[in-house]
Length: 130
Image (cartoon, rainbow, N blue to C red):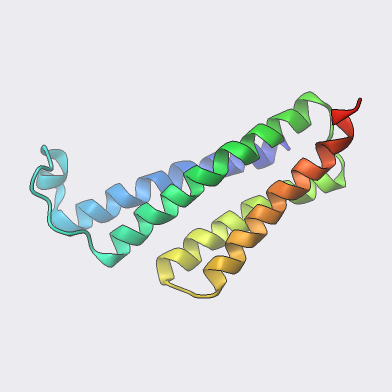
């Protein structure tokens, strides 16, 4: 699970850089490095990158909490690992689909990531009464 957590955090890092990269592409490095008080309306691509990042930030705390709990509680079974992999794959697919405007694939990939979180949570349920 530690490797999955690391890869998820790598995804967060890469995805967090995307809006800045796209803003620089839109307005140029000089305006990007300035106060940014008078920026033009963001391009659709930049808007998508920002929304995709916000969506990841909404889903990340629950997954990371459950993933760390799975390590602390020694729950490294197939269900936990499958959930972690499903979350990672779903989130990578989600940002790709979001950036390309692929419907309904964006929603399907979101649900895969959510299912991954649910699987990790399900694996921890026996520890509630332990």
